[in-house]
Image (tube, rainbow over all chains, first blue to last red):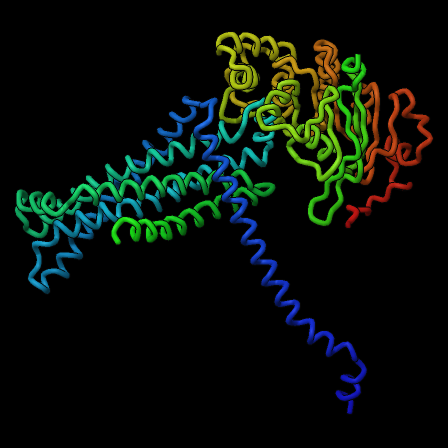
Length: 277
Length: 263
């Protein structure tokens, strides 16, 4: 009886049940709109930033510094990644291929995997962690301490001064890094193949040259250019729109690395589809 | 003659809200050439947003901002860059570029904005550093992080005046400084503005600063200018809100719990 009277005493109940679907629609709609809004904001930002890369005034000094920051200082990281990837690839593919008596394919597999896939993707991910994070943290701190506003009041466009140099450097430096990574990676495979698995040195090199085509390397370098652009663009976007305080900068840095890494994997698939199908 | 009579800065009916928070609810303000206007108001009353609307760092939802009689809200990017050359700004936190030495900070507007040759820009920068009472020789090649808060403020002031702007904005110039350093900065502001013959717009809640710097005072409350007049009339404004604010009383028409108005 108690529960009955309780129910009858709350006539709003049916209205609240009807409200529930509306509430769910509201939440879903809200998050979809928010998602679309951020995609729109990101596209506008990237479009505007790219346009500023081609419009004077240019800042060659700053661009050069970014070349060094993004390119030269990432070399050890990318080099180590490529070296050990090439080495482990030779080791793993050897174990697999001996089961089919196809040991001879090791050199080819290493060369193709490194140039087409592993060097660009792994270098991209490593650079996203190293460069993307530092760009987001630097620009985010400048935003939080009003240094970006100060640029504007000193009649310097922050898109030209801060963002264009980083986009240009990211796009041009990553292919160069990947090219070096290709060489180091294949050399890593060679070291394991010759000194560990007992291939003859001449044979290994010959097999590598035989199988490798120009397009394998070029497609990898184009991927690298796209990945470099993604890393710089994500770092700049999240830093530029950083929230307040230390926490805002931290969040911006996290977003920059995560979004760049995911976009790299997505675009890797799309570009592979474009090149090889 | 219309150009001579048009005020340096003219705001009419500026409105701005962030989400459902109304920050500016129709701000009207006129600053004449060569005048030093100080906007006073409590925290969160919309002072900083007003300043950023004039500078174009924030775009107001509606209203008009005229500089020298020219509407600025519909300017294209390049025209805006040109207009920015009239402005100098002293930021609350200094906002010095921490990646460059002091002299380059001061010379930044000259080198990057006006494309001046570096050697010449350095000479001017050193003069400006001396002008704000710092020993140029010892300070010029240090980095901002190596200076105390008061020195950073001075350098920031030197940067704001380095390009000889027509209008200088000061965002809470004395916040976070000890009373003596605050007074020194106030004196410097008065001297620099007089020296350049510039128009100045300051936002602050430091009454000592107001009495030192201002020719005219405007009080902002809940996103509106509720009183404006010459600094001499500040004490007999006949406005309860102004009275409460300048005497710093906890009780009165201004309720400290009042937050933003919402739509």
